[in-house]
Image 1 (tube, rainbow, N blue to C red):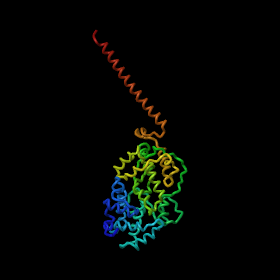
Image 2 (image 1 turned 90 degrees about the horizontal axis):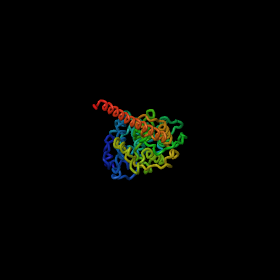
Image 3 (image 1 turned 90 degrees about the vertical axis):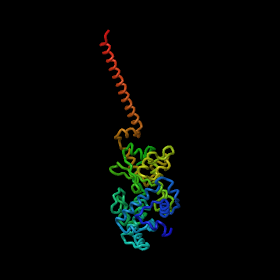
Image 4 (image 1 turned 135 degrees about the vertical axis):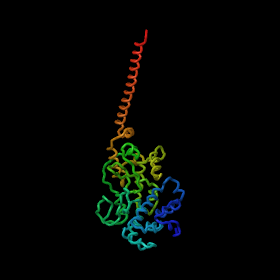
Length: 364
């Protein structure tokens, strides 16, 4: 690409709407060969990515107003300067030294965090005015992911951000079973756990608000680009496992896209590819097949198992305990049958009494 390319003219505060420009933007980030047809082939495939990108650019301007003069192409250059072993401070200095436009230290910090956030699908740093529920990741010396141990001084992108946000070692030793019914639809219909869609990978499978809301990442199209990209700093097994967890909760039904997700997709403009993942077989649903997301899956399964139906709808759909479910509905059926025949018997008695009274009053 040359500087005359439209991405080198439009600034970060000007959204990218053209499918051709979106295709070029993604190819520059992931070093892939997407074409316009593949970008347009699936509904909303990259809509969530660009919607989040535009929001992040606007929030970044709250910290560094000069960002309004930075083009999309110039941010792409900052992304290219990022490396898995790069330290944040060295990248900031590199941006100040090599950028083709005047860059203050404040602007260099903002562009570095924005570039990493865009590339990794994470909320790195926190820009003024951000009122989202995102789990923010801090990239810098001594300031690691919230809630994680600060036992090292690692500042590299791969160590202080990726490895600490997505640890490959799990703490849960539970061997929970993940049946076919353990889906997002059942979590809502039976467990009363509301599904909240997120574009922040760090929030995936995170329970919030006293375990009443589940965050679910849906950008499978972007995850596939990370799989295809040789330059992606995200571990391939992490990306693959993330896609499998999405498939676990949004399984296809009889070979067709998940019907519950189809409704959600229209309401929230979700990536349609999230509903097109292959169905996991019983072996692939074993908890031992999950590493990065194992602790969150186990916690979610325990929370789901502990929930009790609170509405008629939840009672109707709750077949987790087959014997109790069958016994309950047999009892309900017997109850209504008893009432039905009781009403019939009462009506028959009334009619018989009325007929008797009428016969006694009639003249001989």
